[in-house]
Image 1: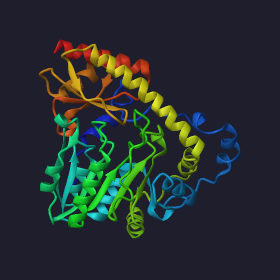
Image 2: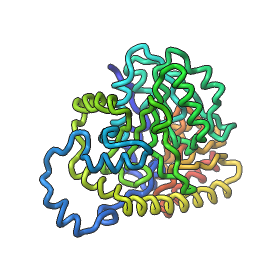
Image 3: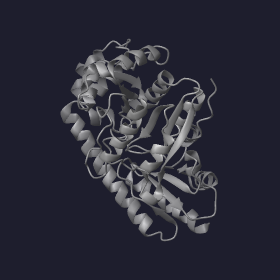
Image 4: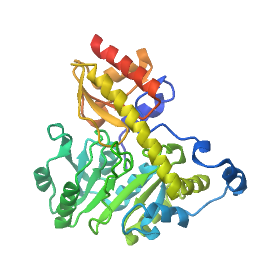
Length: 370
């Protein structure tokens, strides 16, 4: 197995802590531990917990709380992973064989297309279209799904566009997969980060062969916990657990404990209210900046996620533009090249408001110069 270099992850991990203005993050500004749990709980419960191995598939309590977010799901459908990245890795590893055909919604976080190729399968892109406000063409889906298709991979809400599929569109995807016996694999890590506070429906329970991945990194502002999950039919969850034994083995015990607290009903609602306040403020800042920068960028405002996909009108390659911003202005953004879409930038607006405004002003200055 050979994997291509994951350009976006390497770019972000190398520079995100070395710049003054990080607009590359796709989640909301992280919570502190003190902002999440009571000090008394830290002292009376967590401080006395032996730091050993926990349940390798996640504690029963955590799996119950994850399952409660999905209609018809139980703990037996849940496998807890080290972030959504491991969840996606395990699903592709378990489902795909060399020579399999798969359909992959693009643009997206490029982990899935590159893993598909690494396992020897053949990815066929199914592109979201800007002229449809980042919706897909469902007639095209009928053409790209064939009797050889093993799975359809989607990202909803979408990274990098922030678009959200309609319920009819989700059903059309499940119908297309069902006609050929394919799996639908939905990365839903941005679910809960909707700017209008209307929760994105899940693919879970829409068809028998559906797998959902998710986690606490984006909508919850808890990326450092590294808690992700897979929802799948019980027999597949058992199979995936076996694959998990060869990777991280178990989620961190302390992260499991804190994640249980985060997903208690009262705390869960408080976290999402905080996140939506950050999203509202950030999107307002970005909207004002874009409106005051006529001719520099055009965009379709996102429906979910702390990310916007901007089309810029300067005659420069997106990676070169990102490098100039980083080196000369200490601003980090994600170039469209990392999504195979030069001429675009992914800008995160979930960070601190003052830093967002300054980073955008510096971006605007460079675009005007160009």
